[in-house]
Amino acid sequence: MIEYTLNRKKVKNINLRVKRDGSVVVSANPKVPVEYINKFVSSKEEWIIKSIEKFREIEDKRRVEKGKIQILGEIYKLEDISIGEDKIDKWIREKARLEFHQSIKRMLPLLKEYNIKAPTFKIRKMKTRWGSCIKNKNSITLNMELIKYPREVIDYVVLHELVHFVHFDHSKNFYNLLEGLMPDWKERRESL
Ligand SMILES: [Zn+2]
Image (cartoon, rainbow, N blue to C red; front, side, top):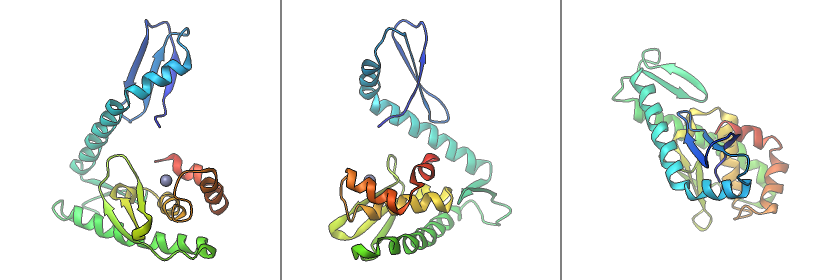
């Protein structure tokens, strides 16, 4: 699903733009119906996702080039944490492994009554998803990028994946359970 800002303007048809911050802006003539615009945006989905990824990569590079990294919602200078740029990837991965493990430990007890076993987890650099799960392998995969976000946000993604062990799809039951366990999940998700 692609979220976009719609500007009603006297343009000829529809103009679509992906901004540097990854937001999508559509300008359309007031006469063009919203359903038509939605279809148009959907038809450009692949291009939009690619553009967002491209900007994200540029942004990531820029951060490292400037000698800064973001961990748990805070930005650090590499010189302050005294880690060389050659070791930083490994250091971030270790940090992510520890934090994601702790998040699973925090979130799992919320699902106590469903008797879910602690899943194994993998960390990957994923382009379009924050997490995924394989129910019959009892495993979840988390996006390495998540380590940039505060713990509340990591917890939301982890809980989301854990709830999939109870309800595999994004059905109403899935969201009811998620909402019951984490009433502010939408706010947590906002920064993602
Ligand atoms: Zn899901």
